Image (cartoon, rainbow, N blue to C red; front, side):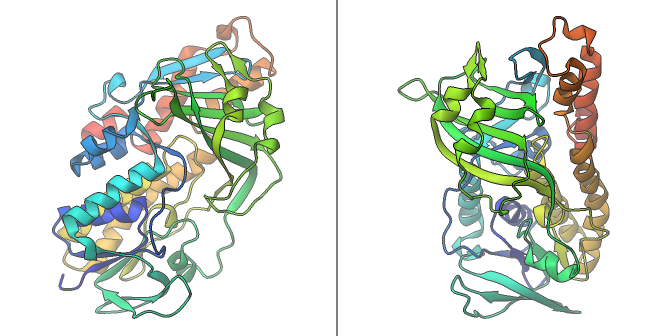
Amino acid sequence: MDQPIIIVGGGICGLTLALSLHEQGVFCIVYEGAPAFQRLGVGINLLPHAMRELTQLGLLPALSACAVETREMSFYTRHGQHIFTEPRGRFAGYEWPQLSIHRGDLHRVLCDAVVDRLGPDALVMDHRCVSVEQDEGGATAHIVDAAGQARASVRGAALIACDGIHSIVRRQLFLNEGPPAYQGINMWRGVSRWKPFLSGTSMVQAGWLDVGKMVIYPISPAPDADGLQVINWVAEIQSPRNVQQDWNLAGSIDDIFPTYAGWRFPWLDVAAMIRAHDLVLEYPMVDRDPLPFWSAGRVTLAGDAAHPMYPRGGNGAGQGILDVRALARQLRALPDAAAALKAYEAERLPAANRVVLTNRTAPPDAILKVVHERSGDRPFERLEDLVSQEELAAITDGYKRVAGFDKASLAAKV
């Protein structure tokens, strides 16, 4: 292709696409609306299917240096009773690890790699796409700066929208689509410096949405001089608070602390950990209904622009990474950009849409729902009177197959 591929959005998805296109020998430029990158957000999980792709890009050493290699996932009731534990990543026999990492560290590793491999001109800041046009010869993005002043439009062989759940490009393709769907669950996402718990590399899910659910895992690879790790936690509660959909909206622990004030387990004082927070963000649990198509001529969607999903199963970023890796391969294999985008859509749209729907109805944290409902939210004497370990394992194994990170699916990939 004589013209570059235009990537709209310099987040995780857009930067991974740039690295993947560079790997395939395809010229690209990333246009990011922010004037400068900041260290934003909290923790994120990279499951083996995503780590397989990032490892192929040569990023495993840099990511491992600032991440926790997750050893196991454990489920508990809100009373602190153990339900189920399974090993994760290489501890479960995968070739690739599961990493827990601060989103800012992941983004930094990707950004550094793009600048190092593609050169500083491949990442253009303060260029926000506000509309797209296309013809038989290419696609054009119309650009403004942070102040809303028009910049010169940019043109390429194709345009890939990696601009997130509020995608301008998606809005242009689907003019009548409503806002993201809110299902009555809010998330408060925080980080605290706290003593290591369980193995020090454990990920825990506890409680249930009716009475308060928590996801807790460390995101700093080793304790600091005070013996503390950076612990990421997510409080999920059924709530009518459909707040602004801004990943960086400040939250207040006063809204959640009464729910978790009594959560003190032998291995972790959850209430005290929440009180020790360094940062709290609030976000509604939202997604969008699956789309019938992503690609229109020389324009397509990827990641959250294509399939925003409930953050259950730790799989949102992973699906975006799978998108852009498939897209890069198709753009290398097919000389016609429009044909490549349609081939990418055919490969990824059905799989990603299945994950969106599964995250609504049968995510792996349904383990907690099963025990919550069968126990009547009361402490149990014998878990096996409520549910077998085989039934619990079937829930997590089924989700892995849908999401594409079961061992058989990964072994079958080229």
